[in-house]
Amino acid sequence: MIYMGQDFRVSAHDDGRRIDRIIRKKWPDLPLSAIMRSFRKGMVKVDGRRVDFSSRVASGNCVSVPWDDPEAGIGKDALARFRDSRPEIEIIYADNDICIVNKPWNLLSQPDTAGGESVISRTAAALDWKDTTFMPTPVHRLDRNTSGAMVLALNGVALRGLHEAWRRDGVRKTYLALVSGETPDQGRIDSPLLKTGEENIVGVDTDRGRYALTRFEKINGDPSLSLLLVELLTGRSHQARVHLASIGHPLIGDIKYGDRK
Image 1 (cartoon, one colour):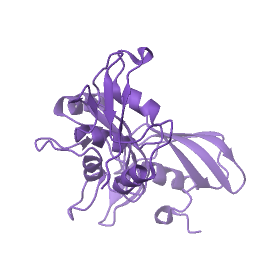
Image 2 (image 1 turned 45 degrees about the horizontal axis):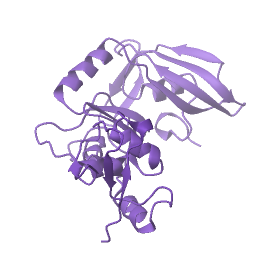
Image 3 (image 1 turned 45 degrees about the vertical axis):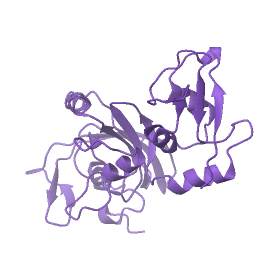
């Protein structure tokens, strides 16, 4: 494997800034996961010493990175190497306490009894995780076939603090949903939900169901489709899917809950 790298000096404009933010500004096309992995493997150095991604630098410091000059573009070999090793989960943000990832569809938030791939394992791989006492831990879940931002704690203190924020309703959960039919401009659905049987099916049950509240606002649409901004005020399994289907507007492609087209 050919090593490709370069050194650059920290400018006066970047004096006191975090090194990871300077690097992301200079190389906006590099995946954050590749940058983070380079830090964890000690491939990014300041004045010859390996540094943490959150380290702050001073004007005149010499920074060494394992890729090409941004003015000339990233070298083909280096870019191919990063693309080949890029994990299947995108890191949106990471610091010493939390990591926010873009969960793809068809991926479990947490491993099931079969022990397959999950957001936890993919995030650990993306961060080149070495701590055996604590794994990146989701603070909330998204359904397997739902994509979107997920927050993971990277230590016990952060996990407790984030759980408290969720408990106090200090977090807003919004989603974009493309549904069948023309919906009202806005709406509120508070039908109780109950999971039944062994097939992971959730339905409206006014007698035994748990309280659930969903609000939506139509962004655009026509008689056949509506694009909604959906806010979940509670966090029941399959809540948005079941609530929207219950008012006659199932998610497009959601065969499980009513869209048979």
